[in-house]
Length: 426
Ligand code: DSN
Image (cartoon, rainbow, N blue to C red; front, top):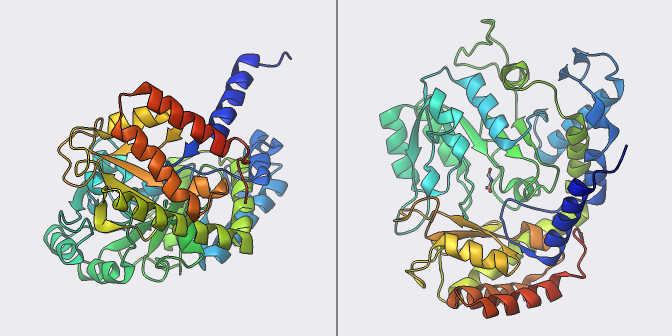
């Protein structure tokens, strides 16, 4: 068959874009060659509905082993009794947990989307907000941090059946212990969505949700640096005390409820090529090199946040405990929107995303903020000394946002900085 030049030329262009640019999207990363190879392997040819040892198709004897390795490594990495590695994404993992734990119309509570929460934590345009009744806790306007006393007041008032800890744009650590005590007061299930900081948590650089949360969900492709996908973990499996049942009306262990909510509840055939790549990534995350990597991610983020603040930018919550920061542009540039900054920086080959800030006066399509993260540039091999240089480049563009010759000059310096670095230096 003739090679599909159109598509493969575009893939080459994308590779070039990734190589020449500074990637600051907090949820992106660059996988290793062996993760990439597993994803592009013959395992994509295989149907394997069901779980290892219990499939609806023949010929699963090899993928049973790769999936079991992924499960076992995930359990080791997070010290968890149970792992389901089949969710196609973090949103799918969350959808399955909500399906296992709630009935349509039930109330659950998550962080307000405009304060750093996630679409799948109750947005009205997501199944979580369409099928269930979401209520929100928020961050404080003065501190930019979650106020656990106020969270408790919302929980006591609204009596959610499930509470979600976690966010996609929150730079501070979570008090899972406190959240468990809030959940226990209203007899709610506590779920942590650690999609963003999963890699930092795996190696003990942030609080561990596993001892306190009934269920933990994550993606595998952000700080964890695996293939695009999701996963669900339980620290210690339990017979659920809430009388939750399978669609057939059986009361089961929590792990069994989740297994059936993933398949056949919300997904069909698992992506065994991606699951094998998850196994490889989890193996990498257990190494000393990965520990060095996550330490550097955190160091880079903290140095970058300081460099931004030194230039007069406001970082929500005044800093970062993890791999990202949320910048409120209004303090330094009240008339410039997140959208304008995102677009101008793309022309300078610096990629980040516009993001609402808490109590934003602008819409999600415009925003007053930007979100910046260090996982991807750290994989490229950048160290803390280079963070202030990147902040200078960003500031140069924002300070003269309509000046195309400034943007062009920044772009050539960005390309010079990145061109020789491999996509995955670690
Ligand atoms: N889209 C992801 C992020 O950028 O944080 C969350 O799903």
